[in-house]
Length: 294
Length: 285
Image (cartoon, helix red, strand yellow):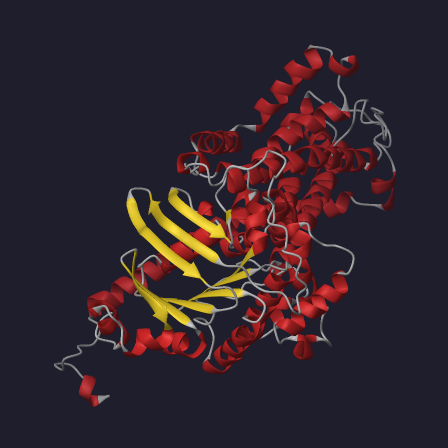
C-alpha cells in the first residue's frame, strides 16, 4: 500500500470528498426514514384499530343497518368487492391485453399506435371519480339495463380504471419477449396470429398475470367509481344486476357516522381491504419471480 | 408493411393459370432420400430505407451442396440470405427488387403465400433460440404445429428430426424437460431439428456456430455434412476455416456486391479477384 500513499500518482480521496460523501449518505438515509414514517404509521394504525374490530361474526354477518344495537359485519362488502372486481377483471384483461398485443405485434411505431399509447397514458392519470361519473351518466342516468345502481355498472367503472394499467403493463411485458423468438417462429412458416398465440403469449404469461393482479389490487381499493354506480346496500347479493356493497364504500359510509361502533367497523373493513390487496400483490410478486423474462 | 416488388414488373415468366395457387408443396420426397432444390438469385437488390444492403446480385445455390457466404460485417450476407425466405420483410423499411427462384418458382410472385416460402426454405439463426416455454419435444413439434403441417405422425416426425439433427441419443430420455435446459450446442441442434421437422428443401444458416464453443461447432459442422445429402444448404459464416471445412462452394461478398463465387478450394487457394485474395489471406476484413 505504501506505493499509493500521499504524493504518489494515485492520491487518496480528499477530505472534502469524504465529507460530502458522508453528508449525502446521511441526508438520503433521513429522507428514506421520513418517507417510511407515514407508511408504517398507516399500517400500524390500521392493524391496531382493525384487529380490535375483528370477530368471527365480523366476517359472517351483513351490516344490519340498525341505528341502535349490533351494527353487523362486512360479509356483503367483502363478497361485493370480490364479485365486482372479478367481473371488472373479466372485462378489462382481454381488452387490455388485446390492445397491448396490437401495439407490440401490429401497430408498433405507426401513428395510430402512438396515439393509442398516448391516450392510454392519459387514461392512467384520469382520477377514478371521473370514471365513476362517466358510468353514472352513461349507464345510470340513461337507464341502461333497468336503470338505477347495479353491481355490473360498478364493474364497468372499475374495468375502465383497470384498462390502462393492464394495457401498459402488458405492453411492457410483451416488449420483453425477445424478437428472436418471433423471428424463429415466423421462419418456421407460422402465420403471425399463431406466433402470437403459441409463442409470444405463453412466454409473456407470468408477466401478464402480474400486471393483471396489480390492476386487481388497485381496483379493489377504489371507492369513487363505485359510490354512485353500485351504491351501497346491507344484504349480501350474488346478483350483479342489483345494488351491491363493497369494502371501500362501506368504509366511506361508516367513517362518516357519528357512532363509535360504526367507525370501529370501518377500521376492521380497512384492515380486511389492506390484507386482500396485500394478498394480490404478493401473488403478483411471486408470479413475476417465476417469469423467464428479465 | 408491403414490399413493392411484384411479378408484374418482371414480365411473364411468373404468370400462371389462376388455379395454380402455388404453395411450395414439398416435392414428394421423403426425408431419408429426398433431394434439395436449386435456389437461383437473379438481379437481387435490397435496401434498408435509402441504404443499399445488397446490389444487383446473381447467385446460384446447387441442390445438395453446401454454399458458404463469407465477407466482412455489414457486407449484406445476412440480408441476402434473409431474402431467400423473405424474412427481411420482418425488418421495417426493407425493400427488395429482383428474383429468387426455387427451382423455377418465383418466391416473390404475387400469389405466393409467404408462410409457404418459409416452410420450403428453413432458417437457423445465429443464437440458439429454443422456445423458452416449451419442452424439448414441444420445441421440435412446434415446427409442424406452428406452420400448420402437423399431419398424423407427429411423434415419428419429432424423433426423425431429432435423429437427423444428431440430438436424439442425447435427449431421448428427457424429451419433457425444458428446451432451454440443454447446453448451447444442443440448443442449436434442437433449433436445427425444429427447422427440419417442417420438412424444408433448403436450409439457411446465419452464422449458426458463432455463439458456440469449438467442440459444439465441430458437431454442427459434421451435421451439416450429413444434411447436405437431403437439403440445399446455405451457410453464412465469419469463420473462414469453417467455410473451408464444410462448404462445396464459397461466395465472397463485399459492400453488398458479390465479388467472387466458386469451388471453395479455388476461392481459398487461387481466387481471381484481388479483394478475395486479400480477404481470405487475412489482409483485411
